[in-house]
Amino acid sequence: MRSVRNITGLYVHVPFCDGKCAYCAFYSVRYEPALADRYLAALARELDEFEPPAPETIYIGGGTPSVLSVRQLATLCRMLRSRVAARRLVEWSVEINPGSLDAEKAAVLAAAGVNRVSLGAQSFDDRILQTLGRRHAAADTVKAVTILRAAGIANIGLDLIACVPGCARALWRKTLRQAVALAPRHVSVYALTSEEGTRLSRLLGRGKTALLTDDAQLAMLDLAETELARAGFGRYEISNYARKGFACRHNVACWRGEEYIGLGPAAASHVGLRRWTNRPSVHAYLAAFEAGRSPPRDVETLTPVLKRQEQVIFGLRMAEGVAPAMAREYRPALDVLRADGLVDLRVGRWRLTARGRNLADYVAVELMC
Image (tube, rainbow, N blue to C red; front, side, top):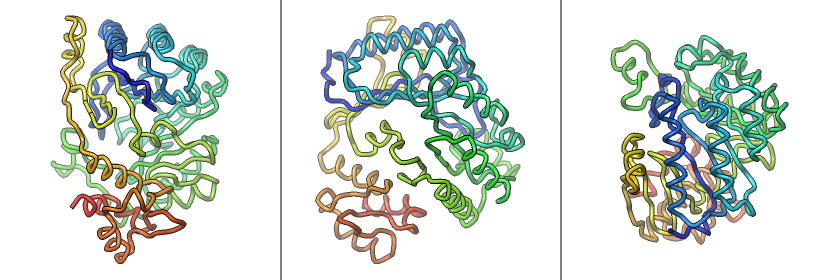
């Protein structure tokens, strides 16, 4: 067994879904009950490769974890509770698709100790949801919030997608206000992008649709910040807003460069200077564990310099910024970026300016040079 006692987070990938959304490039496969049963058994075997971890956070993502049956969700939760020391656990998150949640599933999650849900709302307009290839309606999101609260899960986050073709400014403002009206504690806002191999990229390639211009995208993202700030949400990371005290602890720890392990195909782990990623194949993953082997993985050893570089780049994406001591090696590049109005040294921390947040990818490239 490998020791991972000092990890901060445990990520569990559930790669099953009921069909790909138009924009989705994440690894996933169609849900099949028998395949999911085999997969849950393999997850337990992978976790058994390590000494029992005592993480501060557990995050179950996908795919669509909520596509599992009630029995399978209960099996997954029991497996984690029996193999994870809970003495440090403060946040247990699960990603949920509004269309695949019911009261039984919510009750299973709450009874297991899940205390945070990230709900893939994406939009509150049914026409836009169809454009995105989503399989739920806006009413399903409202219903899911009601179900979760009735089960006792109050820490609910909503994911939204901005800059969708056909979503005019007034409609985007309405979506933001409908999200706020549900009183979530966290809101994520992601600009629609084209990823290779997705249905959206094929439509773009054939000229069937077009993404918004850069200026139009920035205007939509600025509107999100304005509306969410007015409602009391702080922008603690470029794409993430939360009420005070409700930032996603799991993601913040990852962005700070803390250690975590990931279970399942396509899941990454980071312990010390070692990083490994399971290859994205459910069938290879199952074949390995059912034959008593570890799954195929890509492994790399980071240098201290590369690890610090990543911490600086991801640290700048957060409102808390980066301490000068951490960024000492990058002072010349930061000074150039400050002269360009992209970063500033405020209250003893390097932080992106408002303009820098809009050009964060450019800032990252400059720091990698």
